[in-house]
Image 1 (tube, rainbow, N blue to C red):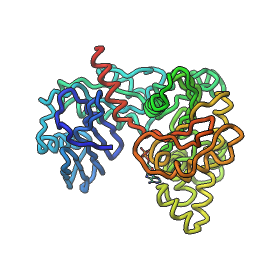
Image 2: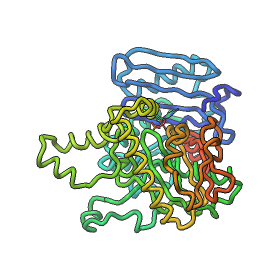
Image 3: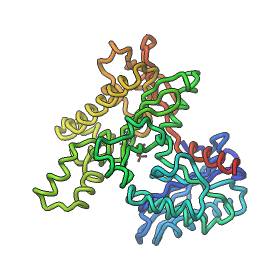
Image 4: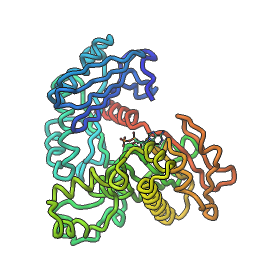
Length: 407
Ligand code: ADP
């Protein structure tokens, strides 16, 4: 994805930040052309053995050593930019775009960073304790380091803000739900929006005419049904735990499992939370969460890996079926993200035997490796089955540039 150094010029570019608990990913990208000037990753923030890797002009620069916090991590990234010849503070950067996971009911659009916005994101931390506080660390750190560059928050939930009420509402006590802001928010929205738009472009169709099922299958995974460019359903809910089987997350379970475990085991609520978010999904079932490893374990006849794979596919097919009915007519089924873009067996098995519904994957096209958007359905498949690489960084950069232009 990185085309570092086509011009190397940062003027008008957007620095996109994705700030995690112990890692920070960044990319300097031109929103119009999509040209990536530089990209980098700081890992193990908060430890003595942190590492930063920065790619620019075809060169990779590294730092290994202690990095105390996100402020230091970004200061280190800025040093690496300077070593590569770019002083970000005076480079003509037009914005910093931040991926923020939970926008709650407050944010349906990207917003300029301000003290008030920071307070609101902080107030939403109860809904996303693993994500919003660490997203904020990146926001406040870069604000201190580059005070003259406007920041823009782009929310993972925003695309799903106007989900139809029937899809957004949990059938629980409505007063409890209202008091605690419990609804289905949906996540990976930036990717679902970008990919559904790119699929329409690939098909040469007007997005408002298209009905699509988008399958974002990465380490986290989610599905959405998109009609006329707007989502009518999605698999993630109050948090990114609901829905598909993921690398380490369970996806859908009977909610009674939580109460049952609390009563019969010595696990407290944090233990259960940790198990469902970090020790479940593929990892919980077979000890591994990387699909490449699981694929080779399956090939070697590993029974646990086979079951993990089967559960993963079973859940995926259940959502595809639900969204076929939700939409009524499906024009395209689109695979994206690490697994969706790279695992032909998943694409084949997710759609096997659906010819009578107008869905037929072409086995030869399906195994072709490419980084470009492509069609993998047969010529007579009524439904276009596509692989469309996601590009959340570019989507965030474009949204950030649009907010700054309109400010
Ligand atoms: P996230 O952004 O959610 O961390 P990605 O979209 O980068 O995840 O997807 C990461 C996952 O993609 C990896 O865990 C791996 O399982 C899967 N993946 C990457 N490359 C391949 C491949 N060649 N074959 C199968 N799976 C792959």
